[in-house]
Image (cartoon, rainbow, N blue to C red):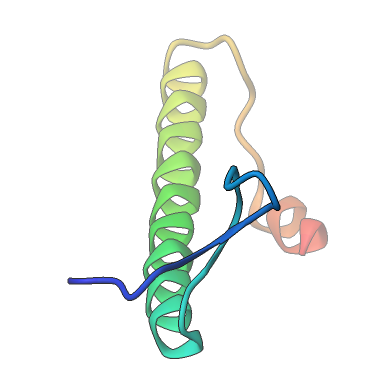
Length: 72
Protein backbone atom coordinates (compact mmCIF):
# COMPACT_ATOMS: atom_id res chain seq x y z
CA UNK A 1 0.00 0.00 0.00
CA UNK A 2 1.25 3.48 -0.82
CA UNK A 3 0.84 6.02 1.95
CA UNK A 4 0.27 9.70 1.33
CA UNK A 5 2.38 11.16 4.12
CA UNK A 6 3.00 14.81 4.80
CA UNK A 7 5.95 15.82 6.95
CA UNK A 8 5.72 18.81 9.27
CA UNK A 9 8.96 20.69 9.80
CA UNK A 10 10.15 23.41 12.10
CA UNK A 11 11.57 26.73 10.93
CA UNK A 12 15.00 25.15 10.36
CA UNK A 13 13.53 22.40 8.17
CA UNK A 14 13.88 19.61 10.75
CA UNK A 15 11.06 17.07 10.53
CA UNK A 16 8.91 17.16 13.66
CA UNK A 17 5.75 15.20 12.79
CA UNK A 18 3.98 13.18 10.13
CA UNK A 19 0.41 13.51 8.92
CA UNK A 20 -1.42 10.64 7.27
CA UNK A 21 -4.90 10.74 5.77
CA UNK A 22 -7.55 9.45 8.15
CA UNK A 23 -8.69 6.69 5.79
CA UNK A 24 -5.15 5.32 5.60
CA UNK A 25 -4.70 5.60 9.39
CA UNK A 26 -7.93 3.66 10.00
CA UNK A 27 -6.71 0.87 7.70
CA UNK A 28 -3.38 0.74 9.57
CA UNK A 29 -5.17 0.76 12.93
CA UNK A 30 -7.43 -2.12 11.84
CA UNK A 31 -4.34 -4.15 10.92
CA UNK A 32 -2.73 -3.35 14.27
CA UNK A 33 -5.92 -4.27 16.16
CA UNK A 34 -6.15 -7.62 14.34
CA UNK A 35 -2.49 -8.36 15.11
CA UNK A 36 -3.00 -7.52 18.81
CA UNK A 37 -6.06 -9.79 18.96
CA UNK A 38 -4.09 -12.61 17.33
CA UNK A 39 -1.19 -12.08 19.76
CA UNK A 40 -3.55 -12.17 22.75
CA UNK A 41 -5.12 -15.39 21.48
CA UNK A 42 -1.73 -17.02 20.91
CA UNK A 43 -0.51 -15.90 24.34
CA UNK A 44 -3.62 -17.43 25.91
CA UNK A 45 -3.11 -20.70 24.06
CA UNK A 46 0.53 -20.78 25.11
CA UNK A 47 -0.43 -20.23 28.75
CA UNK A 48 -3.11 -22.93 28.51
CA UNK A 49 -0.59 -25.37 27.03
CA UNK A 50 1.83 -24.72 29.89
CA UNK A 51 -0.94 -25.20 32.46
CA UNK A 52 -1.95 -28.49 30.85
CA UNK A 53 1.67 -29.66 30.96
CA UNK A 54 1.95 -28.68 34.64
CA UNK A 55 -1.30 -30.49 35.49
CA UNK A 56 -0.29 -33.63 33.59
CA UNK A 57 3.15 -33.68 35.24
CA UNK A 58 1.63 -33.21 38.70
CA UNK A 59 3.14 -29.76 39.28
CA UNK A 60 -0.27 -28.15 39.41
CA UNK A 61 -3.77 -29.23 40.41
CA UNK A 62 -6.50 -29.04 37.80
CA UNK A 63 -9.65 -27.02 38.44
CA UNK A 64 -13.18 -28.29 38.69
CA UNK A 65 -15.84 -26.92 36.37
CA UNK A 66 -17.34 -25.00 39.29
CA UNK A 67 -13.96 -23.36 39.98
CA UNK A 68 -13.59 -22.37 36.36
CA UNK A 69 -17.12 -20.94 36.20
CA UNK A 70 -16.56 -18.99 39.42
CA UNK A 71 -13.56 -17.28 37.79
CA UNK A 72 -15.79 -15.79 35.10
